[in-house]
Image (cartoon, rainbow, N blue to C red; front, side):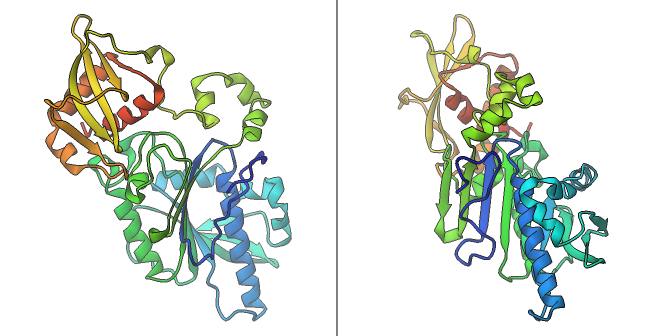
Length: 361
């Protein structure tokens, strides 16, 4: 687990090379250094492996890494903004200077640096569009950066992104060809649900979770030390106390709403819908007098009304909900757009926002 007193992300007990755990997913506060940490880890593994090969300590190069982003445009932006080179400027990883040059070159999807004065290939950069003919026998780990999108329409595969994990699975199979490998997935807590949490069955709202059967490890990373330090910086001071600050510090999702929308329904409100979302019970009520609609997570179902299943407790999307509830989705979108919804707490809104995210229209 991440070290609780660290100002920056300092890893966890998950390690590349552990034969019991092969997939790690981490969400958390912004600016913690998650990408920097894992890139530095992969740099060191690759460079040491290459040096061992040059010294004839191993018989082949096998530990190069792959940096993956969703689109080619996102990859170009990461390269242009210097995310790869910034690793060398991070104080905890200054020892890389003794292993290679801090100047990286990017040529035809290959990442190169100088080792002993010679340009040397240490890794690859690809996007989810490149999924054919890429068998890489010299790699054993992949970093998928920024896996969480702020809109469902930004995921690949359509249908609210539920097919994107299949695209990643095909890329995984194409790249590694059944060889043992490790995947690291990183992102910020932008939305209440995402196709990867659903695919791996991460329970709603947990901070730490493991699935031994799928050798999958999940954690939400945040430390108070990092929050306190953030509030001493120029940007932290500028936005302190705002909705963005609460998101950046890992307290709320980006899509959280103003507290003005948090209230209880009036007694005369009429129950309209029973919902099951991520295994949780939601009810939707309407104040006929004012047209306001209330969503609650603490009211009993009306047994005379049907129960609409949106997503089960293992975060698996009910495909029948998407296919057979267009009228309900249209109504929700219309009323939400007019600002008519209210919620009894932020958690209720997070659950409700799953419905908004799955609306394909």
